[in-house]
Amino acid sequence: MIAIDKELSSKLANMSFVCTLLVVFIHCQSGGVDFISHFLRRYIPGAFLPMAVPAFFLISGFLLAGSFEQHWWYCRALRKRVSTLLVPYAILNLIYWPLKWAVHTIAIRHFGADAETMGLTWRTPFEILGFPFFHGPAIGPLWYITTLMYFVMISPALCRVISKSRLSAVSTVVLLIIIFAAWRCVCRMVEIPLCVRRFLYFGFSLWGVIFFALGIAFRIWWGGYMPSKGYLWMISCVGVFSALLMEKHGLCNDNVFFIAPTVLCIIGLFAIVPQGRWPSWLTSSSFALFALHVPFLYFFEAMLKLVHCHQFVFTGLGLISEYIFCVVMIIVFINSMRKICPKVVNVCFGGR
Image (cartoon, rainbow, N blue to C red; front, side):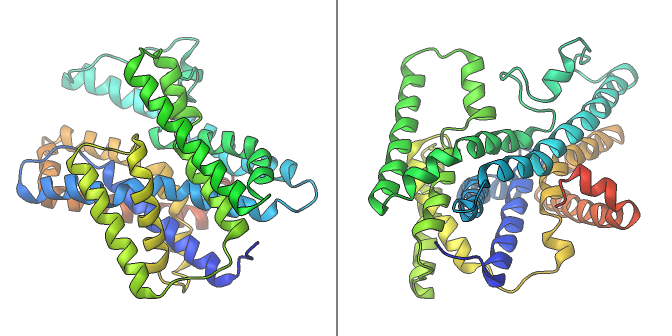
């Protein structure tokens, strides 16, 4: 099993930050009224975004596999993920939903917004947190956290099977791909209840577990060998070209065909991202940026509608400006809050 040294740790941190930037980009205002906006929204996400969340799952599996040989590792892993994942998940969703409800209600009552008021019932707290499973969490991207918790729960079985031999590792990944492909075929032929389909997206992601298992396999069986930079650049180009081709033919990230190009793109990104550690105030903001960008964009776009400037974000310049403004403001906010109230930030963001 490969050990994680400072260089590898910094590379993984840098890589996570880049993937977070990709996730933020796709959640900026959709649509487009000019060529630049259309190009940025269609081809940049189509080429690069499909690797962002799979890369998170792969990195998580890679890191978790390092503790597999330790005594009582499973109990420690669960306890750590509760404090670093579930606690922030609950706090951030419970804070965001009432604020969103207030803005939504004010917009309807005072500005004539064309939407219905979000009602409050006894089920509201459960719906805020993503339960029952036909609801996503209040902060949409945080479905990743609940999914990762499911993967951590089944990680002993995955680690035990994958660690037996290289053939066992390959067989496990292939079996997971077959299960995912079979599920996609069933969905096309049979009317699956919405709650089941939502659970396998917001809960136990069938495509996500493939990359989680790949991360475990890489950690256990990868000897640290890296091909030359020429080969790695070629791998990256093949991955990006394949992703663009799939985007053109409408094969998005819920299709089995996206797995191979995504793996190639992740390998290419791993090779391209520099080893030297980027500033800690930058890379340590990754989780906050991932968790807060949707609430920030919601309130920012609501403010633009209030002053009748929301059409600006549909232009290429508006999209770029909104994206940069979102990233910069969240990084400034989280680093300022760390200095003002570090303990609160530590609890709300799981010590990240």
